[in-house]
Amino acid sequence: MASHTDAIILGAGISGLTAGFYLAEQGFRIRILEKSPRVGGSIRSERRDGFLMEFGPNTVLESTPLLGELFQKLGIAAERVDAAPKAKNRYIVRGGRLHALPTSAMAFLKTPLFSTTAKFRLLLEPFISRAPADREESLADFVTRRIGPEFLDYAINPFVAGVYAGDPANLGIQSAFPKLNALERDHGSLIRGAILGARLSKKSGETPKSRAPMIGFQNGLQTLPDALHRALGDSISTSCLSLLKYNPN
Image 1 (cartoon, rainbow, N blue to C red):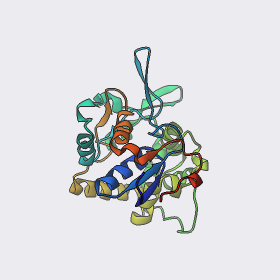
Image 2 (image 1 turned 180 degrees about the vertical axis):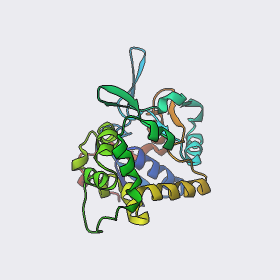
Image 3 (image 1 turned 60 degrees about the horizontal axis):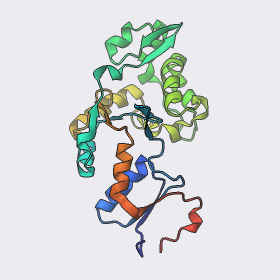
Image 4 (image 1 turned 45 degrees about the vertical axis):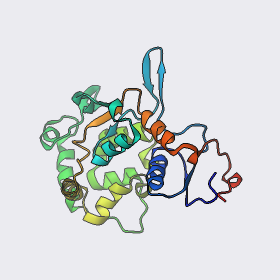
């Protein structure tokens, strides 16, 4: 163990591993502490009986060229697999029928997933006032206030259940979805903020998430945290049940 540590990172999920990798690349001496015996956080891939099983996310969105550069540095670029275009389709059940989640303005106008009332309600979103700066809202309250209850029930709630396994009424907008909260705070509107954000992404060379390709790896998404683990080596300490047992000096 190094005699001096410049930075201690708590958690060897994908965020902690990536932060540690780039800090180490710049010459910082880092230590990542992970309470579980493995790295990767919610990313976990296993092969069983000839099948590849993903216990967490199975793809990432290539919204920035930095991802490709990272894969090259880690030596896993050849293991990349691009998702089929149809994999982007998402479906919601309403009234006992499957409806494709609209991904364009024209598809939104035509979809039976949302009522005519809900569609007109969305047009009012740019005119909804910001919430007071000191108000703490749940995701459910935020979405209902800005775009109406139908979007909460048939767009936001299914997404949150799949990603967070949680109830939108129990998730704080500022903590769980800070970028969504920032759109209202900085631009006064989710629609206006999304449009301006897309323009900034284009100038920076990034691809909007709505058009970014989904990518995975031949042996599962765990390929990425495993590669970061190899690169960081003994800078990672797993099974850290108590941070008090660690002395960086």
